[in-house]
Amino acid sequence: MKTPIRAGIVGTGFAAALHADALARCRDARLEMVCGIKDLEAFCGRWGVERRTENFHELCRDPRVDVVIVCTPTFIHRPVVEAAAAAGKPIICEKPLATRLEDARAMVEAAAKAGVKLMYAEDWCFAPVLKRVEEIVAEGALGELLYVKAKETHSGSHSEYAKKLEYCGGGALFHIGCHPINWVRHLFGREVVEVVGKTSGGGSRNLVHKDYEGEDWGVALFTFDGGGQGLCEGNYITLGGMDDTVEIYGTKGALKVDLTLGSPIHVFSRVGYKYSVEKAESQLGWTRPAVDELWQLGYPPEIEYFIGCLRDEKEPMIGVRGEDGLASMEVAFAAYESMRTGRTVRMSEFRKSLGGE
Ligand SMILES: NC(=O)c1ccc[n+]([C@@H]2O[C@H](COP(=O)([O-])OP(=O)(O)OC[C@H]3O[C@@H](n4cnc5c(N)ncnc54)[C@H](O)[C@@H]3O)[C@@H](O)[C@H]2O)c1
Image (cartoon, rainbow, N blue to C red):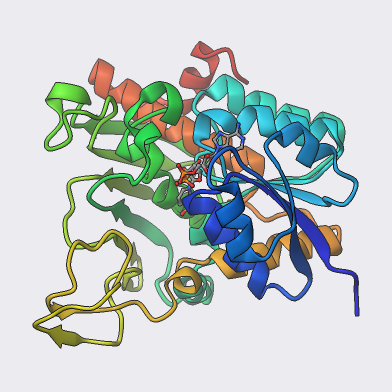
């Protein structure tokens, strides 16, 4: 048996628990150490971890940590990634990669300079249902891809930091629309050349959440190099649980996916029960409880894949590299720019205007 790869998680909140669960299911890895500034004892107790610290530099430098998993709020991704890279450790970083493009670029550069992998934790790229969709598309069942429409929507973030642009980087399109944006890029396997965006505008202009600085509804319509359209949405105005869907239209077929609300179980209850799906407000009446929600959303297969990349020294695929996190941020920011100017944004010009390539 191979020695398991030892992971260190920074953060003890929602995403940290997703990764701790995924590590517990992974044969070739184990959770060695946790860094947190809140609920550290409780988190370590829950996941059976002895080694803990309040200082992420200490976790990154620890000789018994082989890979650092970044589960801090988005504005604290860059310092942790830079500390891990400086310590020569490979990194798995949560989405969105950063709050600002300059931070994302610096993170990609820091990892490249240190010669360590920066892997972007986009769970949609590992969701078993979407992997099956990718197989069907690759087989040619839908012909050439013409148009893909995808969204992640729910009723609002569980985290206070998500209300502030400085801490989160954007509103719903950026914070949760990053999943469909990145997965659609991964599906096409080509770069986005043009973007049009529309959002609710943030703050008092929002449809529901006036206390969020970022938009509570946003869409990005984009064109790929060589053709093909993506239309991605993120919103916080959706009641009834997290609603993630995909529609694909090709020259020879079409396909629809309900990633979150399409459980094979139909329950009717007058009294309710504990949990059905993420962000559902109620379990009364007819509901569709997820079977293994974390698996369905791709977290355990994601960790399995990243650990495999480290064990076998493989480069991560398109969609889950640091560069992909950066490219997805660019699409969302280009949508904001389009909303601001009322124009179609050409990505090459947009990047130049921001001092990028
Ligand atoms: N892939 C997904 O589906 C998914 C789901 C949820 C969140 N996320 C991402 O994960 C990241 C964290 O979000 P969350 O929902 O877990 O937020 P959260 O508020 O639940 O947790 C953030 C954690 O970071 C800790 N933290 C803050 N500063 C720290 C520091 N300096 N050192 C150590 N710990 C620190 C907080 O105490 C908290 O435990 C965000 O980037 C978010 O976008 C991804």
